[in-house]
Length: 371
Ligand SMILES: Nc1nc2c(ncn2[C@@H]2O[C@H](COP(=O)(O)OP(=O)(O)OP(=O)(O)O)[C@@H](O)[C@H]2O)c(=O)[nH]1
Ligand SMILES: [Mg+2]
Image (tube, rainbow, N blue to C red):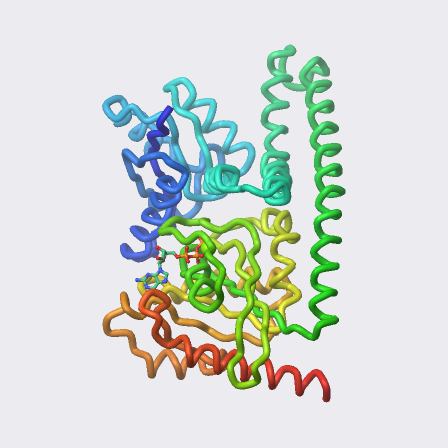
């Protein structure tokens, strides 16, 4: 069944109109990537989201009344819902034939659809358990009520315990299986180290053009698409460094996005280990996106969470063909600590300068290591 979704965002009253619209656009893109369509988009300005239902009750009623003609079967909230909010919202909406997801639910569904390797599938299942786990308290409440009212020990509580135990066991099992993949990857990395191969890792917001850059710089033919989370696995290609005649390894992996809970990122540690072990990071930035500066901060925050903030880094300002009036001088000054380079992967512009900077940075880094 085609998912017809109502998109709802609760934002602070001082959010600019531009940012508010961009946030909903991003959510709509996520819905499209998933294969659904957005039929209604709603923004509520509120200092603090409703503690029971996240969206205020008046607004929620408005959404449900309006939906009589739109016939959506999904309400997607552009934030992370607390388990109780998720439970309460679902209770109200299911009477109208509507299921409720939050932003992370939607991202997990996309991951699930795109994942190909066993490893990616396991990581996604782990992330889903982390995300869904706390919700069983809400479900437990419902089961307890069915069993005779809150506070009554009964079938509900027993079921809740069984469910909790089951999830814990499954989590443990997945972690063990993932350990196996970690070991394989670690041995690959060890092999590369023994060959003295430097590694460069592409990082950046989803859709910034990381895979396009990998394809432009190496002979890899990675899947590229104007979709969020086109890449979920890791690909490593060979990057030829012309001055020294040496080869470095360039790896591409999953892109980042705003509001990802740390637990979810942790579930992808195995895929992200290429970043953690890299000698140099290329932070790819989509200059065609008016909100690119705030997205740089989102990526930096996640890198901080992965404890790789102080790795050598180059800021690759991509898609300059789309960014008319880009103030290159000003941006260069502002980000001078990160050796900014301006490129268009599509038009193959600026790539030579980028390779030179990569080579320079790797050489400096090596000297530092020797000293
Ligand atoms: N105009 C323009 N489009 C570009 C450029 N580089 C990449 N793109 C487009 O941007 C979209 C996303 O590119 P990808 O390489 O898939 O981006 P990614 O960062 O790997 O994205 P995820 O894997 O989804 O995180 C594609 O439609 C590319 O064709 C560029 O320099 N200019
Ligand atoms: Mg990609």
